[in-house]
Amino acid sequence: MTNESDLLKRWQLLSPYLDRRQQACWAAAETFLIGRGGCLLLAAVTGISAQTISAWRCEMRRTKAARAGSLIRVRATRKGGRKLTEVRYPEIEAALQQMLSEEIAGDPMSRQKWVRSSTRSLGRRLAEHGHQVGYRTVARMLRKMGYSLQAAKRRQAGAEHPDRDKQFKHIAALKAEFLGQGLPIISIDTKKKELIGNYRPEGKTWRKQPIEVEDSFFASYAKCIAVPFGIYDVAKNVGYVTVGISGNTAEFAVNCLVSWWKQHGLSSYTSADRLLILADGGGSNGYNLRTWKMDLQERLCDAFGLRVTLCHYPPACSKWNPIEYRLFSHISLNWAGQPLRNLDVMLGFIRGTTTTGGLRVEADLDEQIYRNGRKVTKEQLSGLALSEDDICPRWNYTLAPRANR
Image (cartoon, rainbow, N blue to C red):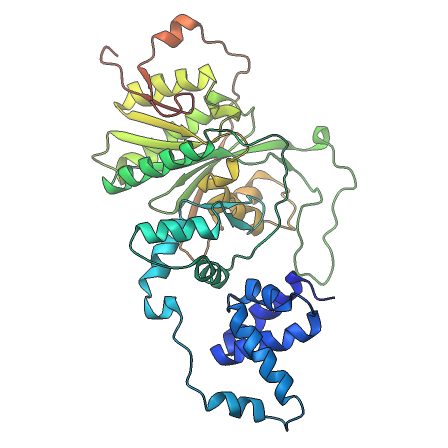
């Protein structure tokens, strides 16, 4: 029996070569192979209305004994249907693309992406901006952009946080504010640690013969364990990766930020006195990590007179952090199937990562050894120039430069 994924593959292959009438004809022909419910299934896959597919199906039944080509001639004598909504109003597709910029999440290890809101929700939001479209039209445009309807596959247990949507809206509003004023926005995270040595890599490459690698896969045998910390400039579409060989600590993360601001931030944003950082909720830059806030205050805010606003994504929502699908996923694909035999090879693959969208990536090595187990007392924490936002205060806060420093 034909399933939806097979239909979708055939539709994506054929539809660019067919006009609207031929697409409806193909959809109707497919319903004969499916049987009951075929019209609704093809409508969901193609975005063509079930009534149109059903009409073609009925006409095919009436003309199945006719000579070849008669059906096309019968339909050709009729007036064509109205043009697609996105053809008549091309600005709708641009508005949807803009809306999706705040809706997309992605896998840092592949090109897979998905949208947070339903087609009905996206349709309502488009209507609020003056574009009256139905959810089927939204679904059709999403398919044209490469999305498809997929069943949910949970990777983490637990219910969604009740403040999840509130935080997403707050992040979107802050991003719009900073971009509108030409202020820097960076997305940060630590990529998966990598064993450096002749080890079997993830992914495949086109070769006549496979690469020979070590049979063992133990961290104790590796030359070192690389810790790539990434910074993605949202406005400029540029990535900066610092590869460390020590622990993934708050001191390491802040040192990467300080190096980025000295080498790139100051020259790119000459008049900026504010910085927005988008980060996950845990790790070396966790929202409840005292050393992270202390080091940011002393080494970035006080040192450069910079007012830093932090926004952390809710639990189990790290895939919505832009760095995951705009930087890390492309790096993973670039070195897929290639053993990272030494740090120079790793840095070369990172620097060589590009996309058709114009992504550029710079990479540096940090051989400094960072301390573990550092403590920050309540008194030290209270001395920070830290103010929490009214919305989700645990995840949103600002560190201002202290006047007496």
